[in-house]
Image (tube, rainbow, N blue to C red; front, side, top):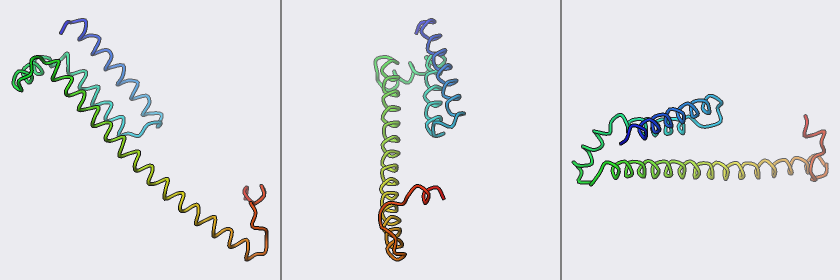
Length: 131
């Protein structure tokens, strides 16, 4: 790996780490995503610093070059990240379904209370919503 490419990788990973840190400080992103991003940044930082180790692991595993090993690691990271996002999306879907069910129950109870009080079962006026 050339010195220029190593410097660009190192600088890019450091910039991405700094941006990720600023995003997590603003509480926009869940901390687990930050830890995944930092792990990826550390991996990118390790490429120029530990290139000899990756070359040795590649020859040990029978790959032609360390580039193939790095691509395998990057693809594994992407698959792990995709699996995590899928689990997160399924959990959000389940929570939304529970909230929809609870909302329907509360609306039916509200409708029943209004009928008991003799008021109109129509939607409440704005004064009732603000109290």
